[in-house]
Image (cartoon, rainbow, N blue to C red):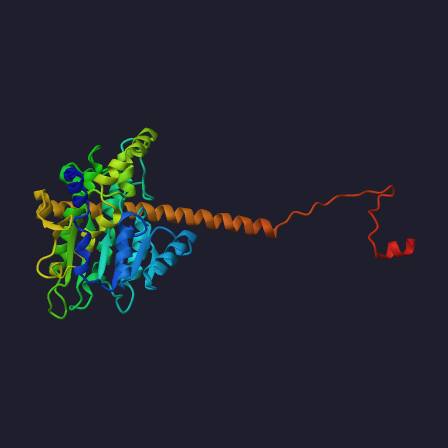
Length: 388
């Protein structure tokens, strides 16, 4: 009798432990998803679309971009769901975020909003180059944390304006790196975090903000005197084969990429697929129990657990972080407004110069003298007719 391969079987069961969790839940009809075109975000959007949800993907691509148009068409065909759309938001630009969110909030009547799923992510690998946002801010901090803070700060009125009988959820993506994060040494600079702890600190910051945002929602007194119906859920999907994970494993180098290609079978066994990683988000999105009681719960690999960092529930830490974020955004937006104004003026001046050049086309005038000092004959003139 052959001996079973117990370690391999246990590993496979561990990697698939959440696969059956989805079937017991139902979907919400209108969802905004950030990071919905790759990795876990794409898997979440596919699963929700299969269940008839209306999906709005927030992407930095223009709606007319051929890649995005084809992606939406393929997704509609695969899920048999025509209620899939995309709107342009560049998370690396505070101005782009404000433009989108302000347009959403100004809509009358308020647009329906059942869920916001924040799973966009940026990671600078060990040997990768420093990247900055459009506002000249370190990209990991700018995209992983500050963009989410800015977006939800503006969308807050639209969230609070939803009817009392609607179950509204705001789902934040995180990972276990938050345990090593450090917010005590935040600096008011373009690179506010300590080198070597940047990624983990952004995850810790977004979790602190998630708790603070839940308190912000709970403090609102609805005009109908009903209880607040919006709840925050924080999700850690576990180690998953996403583009961000591959970037971290390869460390941003060709040798790292070679090592990953050689050992990819091992990572295939250890890491979850994006569809498996999406199950934790889908539980946060659809389990009825999470729509009742207090908000701010933490789902890790399909199980509700407690936070391992006490700062996450610390009101003073949240207050300092909120104030720091508001001041940083205010300063960056002022600088961005000045840059846009100067760029617009330069563009207008260039356009005016081109118009002047087109109107004042130079005409070369030449003096042609003759032997008797009289200019050349002009065809059709009296002197010309006499000569003829």
